[in-house]
Image (cartoon, rainbow, N blue to C red):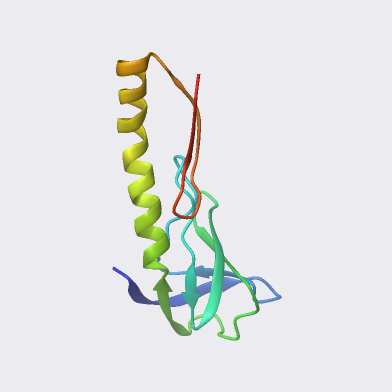
Length: 119
């Protein structure tokens, strides 16, 4: 799913923190970075898991009101890149341990080029 529609369930007073009734934006979790994209054309800069709901942090205020329907678009290139990095890291780490006796001490996702620190 690259695009979807959702309703604004809640929002901050300044309109930069939005809560939707449903979302496909992935919040930072389990070592994988958050999604970016756009909500009603406004750039999404972060998705945060607040336990009961996901906060969508925008680069500028969203002028939609609570109950308005908005178009949402995931930055699919970034999502796919992060999914591939997240999936390949355990495999690479297992090879480093098995072949060279080098254990992974840290893994950092970055645009196109992740970093794996071995011990």
